[in-house]
Image (cartoon, rainbow, N blue to C red; front, side, top):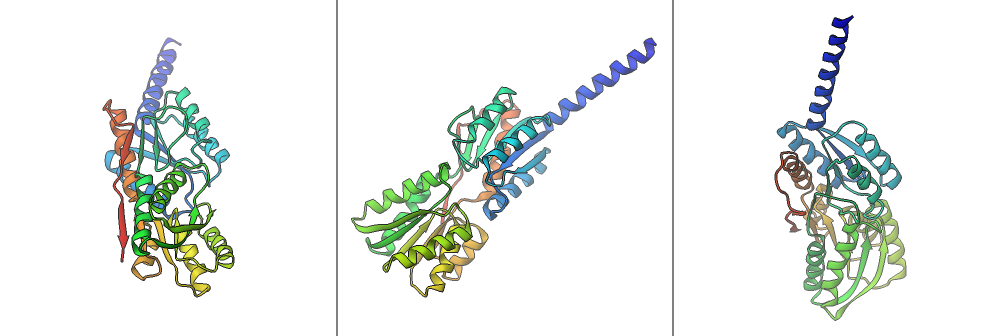
Length: 293
């Protein structure tokens, strides 16, 4: 009987050690949506870096739904993870998910989009305000400071949409000869970008340029413009493969490249530093690049 108790105790110690080891070797990545090439590339960058550094990486898709996001977070928090990386569906709604991780003392790193609450050890992202300003300045320079412009907005409530719009409008307002004739959301979605742009084209007889908060909306807008046989400059944001191809073939003027894979990789590097007791900055910037033909 005594020997049996000893064996059970030894098994319990082994199981506890295994769980602890698993927790220390396992990271979670909760992504806003994998129905967007940008976030697929971000995931792939994180996966490659996690493999290089010896971590298991659990990836969950929130499908652009804050409720699904919270359920995903609760799921991974029950799987004994060491750290959670999250790309929020909404900067306000994600607070509940982050606070759930905080309660379990699981460190949180946000990627690309920030959070408006909860404790986050580091935010890894490009400077979206600067990127929006780069896009706006290019339009101002290309149009010589005169013309009518359309802005296609991303998902309301996300830091990326807010910051890109802020930078863009700052640049546009500096040119008194430019007028924003329409500013409408298309939720970072290509089909919505197409539909919204079709409606704007019907309502506006004169449009010289379009700035879309991401390449997906820009590509949708480009398709609508081509179908309407109008000559309008289009600038996107993200630097996705399709966006870069559109710049190269001349259907888009430019895209502000965010280097999505690098955001994912730096997110994992940041997680590694945190778990090894190193110091990390509250904000870890990832360089932007303006891609033109």
